[in-house]
Amino acid sequence: MMTRMRQALDFVLARWVRSRRDRVLIACGGAGIVLGVCWLVYTAVWGGARTEYYTSRVERGDIVQIVSATGTINAVTTVQVGSQVSGNIKRLYVDFNSKVKQGQLIAEIDPAIFQAQLQQAEADQANAEASVQSLAAQIETQRADLLSAKADIDKAQAQANDAQLQYERAKGLADQGIVAISQRDTAKATTDSAQASLHSAQAMLEQSKAKLNVSIANLEQAKAQVKQRKAAVDLGRLNLLHTHIYAPIDGTVIARNVDQGQTVAASLQAPTLFVIAQDLTKMLVYAKTDEADVGRIQAGATATFRVDSFPREIFSGKVMQIRMNATTVQNVVTYDTVVAFDNAGQRLFPGMTAYVSIPVAWENDAVKIPNGALRYKPEMKEAERLALLAKYGIAEAGRTANKKEPKKESAGMRTGTNGGPPSGSGGSSVREDFALVWKVRADKSLEPVRVKIGVTDFTFTAMKEGALKEGDELVIGESSKGARAGQQQSPVGGAGGGMPRRM
Image (cartoon, rainbow, N blue to C red):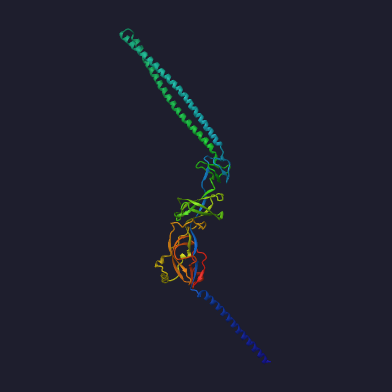
């Protein structure tokens, strides 16, 4: 019995030892498989590649350099209709979007006050005219009195002459003793009285002349007052006419700033009642253009623009004018570029925001280099790079071959790509420069290529001279062996479609 129990115990112990050994072997085998897979992945991804390049292909096509700006749509002619007189708006005859004709009555101000003022002015004028007539009659009377005074002088003169003769006769007779001396004295007194009467008549004549001159002056003053009263009448009549507001042009009412019954005050300046746009079928875009771009824009150039109301549509026009009046906001200088366009369907309204694109340079059927390739510089030692340049016959000046890419549009300006370029090649104002790009050869090595560049749309740049052709792979970025995943260099630039290649 004891022997059987010992045998059973030995069997159980042997099975337990064998099971533990099996578990250890299985665990070790699994760990070995995991380590092998990790090693294979590490070798395939990191150990087998020295450098990973990101490339983009050279393309062929048209390149258009665009100046972008934001502007506002306006009517060609916009007139603010105001009031020259103050008062209550009695009646309105038009409203928003009303079509009006030149001379059409569009509003009326209560005319009661101005009618009363006109009547008062007319009464004052009539009174002044009556004063003129009264003074004219008085002058005629004074002229008659003046004639009477002259007659009195003649009469007094004749009496004085007669008295003088009588006195001389009486004096002679008295000296001879023929008549009494008292008679001579009487004749002398008569002569003196006649002279006094003559002097009085002459004084009356001068007085009559003075009165006549005063009356003539008063008449001239009265006539001037008549003119003043007539001017007041004309002003009152004009103010009365100004209570009727007429449309100065044919057009559309785009703003109505008053309501019926509202009081308008025109004491300091004429209040604006309406805004009328003359012709909404022909409109303008006032685009705020950066000072760095105005030198490249030419009058007559074709321009395209978009509006938020129709985001999928492109509208076109012509650059009509670049205005010289600068606007400075936070040290940013802009100029108004005026773009004229047809708005036959009147779909675009004044005040809309327009995003304008103006082609300033272009190149048709050009070899297009991705701009990322122009910015790329390989991560290699200087000696290796110079040796590679010498191998392909590029002078040491290649150190400075990579020039800075042309500065992009100002912040806040949208880069438009719509609209086709005009036929022919780009304008003479485009800056041409040399750059160094790196092409991937068939044996996976890099070949430096020196090119002359021209027009850029800030995604691709036209090649003016160089050995590149359509389909060539250019490096736009790289990631080196041993770099952490979060620190790998990503593709540079705006060239799309670049796929990584291992070498």
